[in-house]
Amino acid sequence: MDDFNLAMQNADLFEAQGKGLTYTWWNNQKDSPTSKKIDHAFINQPWAQVFPNSYADFLAPLQSDHAACLFQMPSINREVRKSFKFFTHVVAHNDYHASVRQAWNPQEIQGTCQFKLVRSLRLLKPVIRGLNKQHFSGITTRVKAQADKVISVQRNILSNPDAQTVREEH
Picture 1: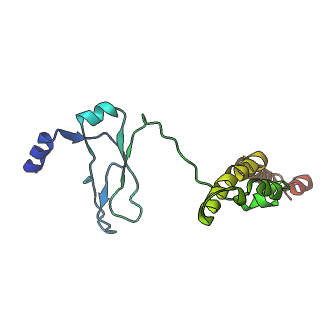
Picture 2: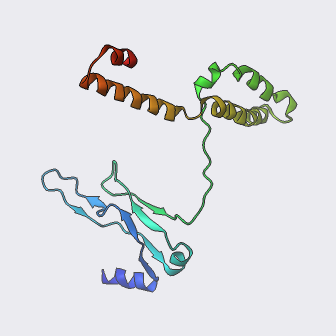
Picture 3: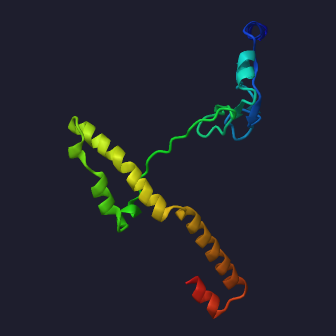
């Protein structure tokens, strides 16, 4: 340990601020479980100056006996690209086929068949996203609101049952 501490001092490394789990390892024993902090994240002074509010976030170990460490740097603004997800409910919309026909023009694109396909899909993506956003956005919020309403009606039925509330629930 003395050699390790000396090496850390020579390298000008020190432990980063940690958040999340207190302990980062456990022995996986049911009868006499033991937890310890054996995982650490180290930084140097230049790092601390560039990222003053960064910290090591020790996450749940999931299938491992060690906690994963994710370095968080809140001062960095990153653009998060959302992956494209095709929702089949868009196909049922009346404007779907016309929108796809209008956006899908591989014959006007120069290049190999594979390039034409990829380019056509890229041109189609904003059209389908637009249809979904215009006609189906906020569906999760609307579903949650309806679920909350059903829960409220069901509570009313269980606390003060009457025919009107039962009809409303159905």
